[in-house]
Structure formats: structure tokens, C-alpha cells
Length: 101
Image (cartoon, rainbow, N blue to C red):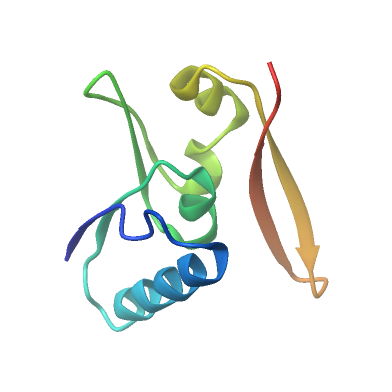
């Protein structure tokens, strides 16, 4: 299934609802290709990430290896911080915070 920004114009709650549903489809074995301009979507739900810059492949691989502060600055032209939070002592949550210029 190919999806072009399926969470565009949705509030946070509905974004998570849609992304959760997409993840459940992937967990059932359906191949999902999804475009997004939100790094958090890749960090939260992606299993593999492909970053494009100028129409060419910039990087690809696991979200935690590809979505980095350096790659976000190179792609978006702004500094960003990847914040890590431990949930329930076992699971790590990573989110992207863009920093003011």
C-alpha cells in the first residue's frame, strides 16, 4: 500500500489513530510505503526509512540510524534535537524538536 502523507491536516490525536492503524496493517504483513514531512512519524512507527534530498537518496536504513540531528539539519536547513525518553523502564521513545534559528 502506498500512502502520500496520510496524516496531513490532522490533529495529534487523529494522526496517532491513523498511524496506529497503518502499523497494525504492517504488523499483519501488508507492505506499507508512506511519505511524510514529519520525522517523528518515522521515529515512532517506521521500520525502514528513506530520506530524499533534491530528488536523490540522502540516506536509508533504520529510523534510529537515519533520522539524526545532522540529517535533519541537512534536509530541512534547521537545527534539531533528537530527544530520548524511557517509557516503563524498557521502551525508548525518540522525538524530534526543531530549534529556533
